[in-house]
Amino acid sequence: MIKKAYIHEYGNRKLEPEHQDVIDVLEKRCINYELFTDKKISRNQLIIDNTTFIAGDHSVFAYIFKKYRLAPPADCYPKALQNYLKRDIRETTIHNISNSFDGNIPYIFVKPKLKTKLFTGFTIESPLDLYRLMEFPGNTELYYSPIVNWKAEYRVFVNNSKIVGIKKYNGEEGYEPDMTVVQNAVNDLENSEERTKAYGIDFGILSTGETALVEWNDGYALGSYGLDKEIYTDLLLARWCEIING
Image (cartoon, rainbow, N blue to C red; front, side, top):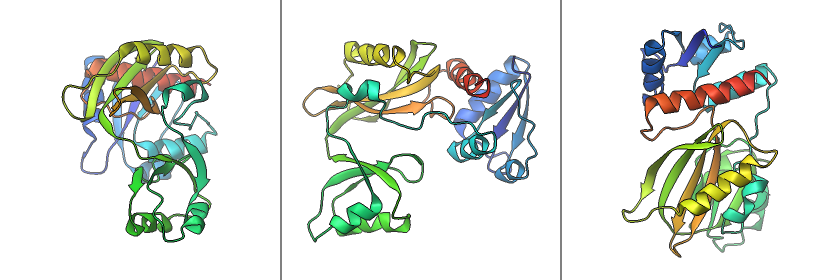
């Protein structure tokens, strides 16, 4: 049972909008909370156990996972969902991409494989785009894939095996995901060893009209895109409790 929550702030009570939503729900449920900054967590001033809840960004959780030797899944393309990608996604490193550059632009989409928030995925369409990778270590592992045309993108929120919300976050009007495809993907993940209690699974509609997996996102630090605050908080709580209880 959660008795206290720690909510990340950037200083002077500057919060992510989602975290303010969480606070609203915690107050309604009479659960005490405390704001914390990066400095406070780096000084080990948080008392974390299975009765406390954490709401923070990915850098906060990276620190917590390292300190408490927790290892939630980091792969945004689970094996159980490979059939839903509708594009060829491969692995490489920054070093390999830079060494293979011979003056011809590769025209690919790249994103970090493990340190998923190291940088936001982007398309390489010019030498300048390629040079953007040079600020990171050469052994940084990447995913790369052909550039595709997403007409619209949606986040599907799943808690305890059930779809609890769907929010569009990018793209044109008039494009909606095929919910049969979405439900089949959720079922396949839930029937695999890669399943977790709560997560967001992003789907997009390609220019071909197909519904395809954009990526899977773990539920401990998830953008809500305006999801109902009660549903959102329950999702975060479910995933955090699963992680902290092993």
